[in-house]
Length: 120
View 1 (tube, rainbow, N blue to C red):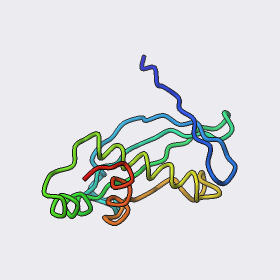
View 2: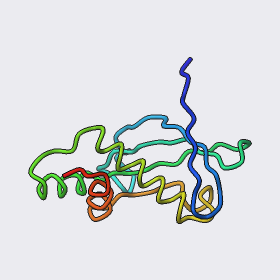
View 3: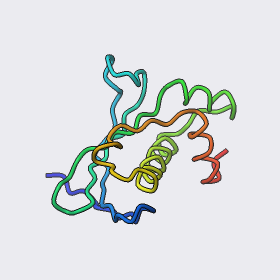
View 4: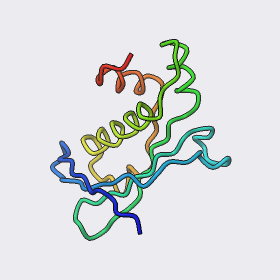
């Protein structure tokens, strides 16, 4: 049995979310975001209903970041970008369960997110 560490985030929309990281995998070949890495989080805002939110990090965005910075992204940096994308959705999407279950990180957002963490 896996014990997951539930974390809390107070979003700008007024909701307090609880979430945990489920895992990551390569996006399915027929997924519109493919090729990409899919980071999966379980999320709840009411402690009753938990739903999955997928954050897709396309290979093209990673390749562009690598070209720009002259080095590959580490796994920890990729996870950090996915988590920051999730937080951004917590802040910006009013009904995450309905409108925020599939999130994508484009090259601009990837660069902005990692720059905010001091990653170069």
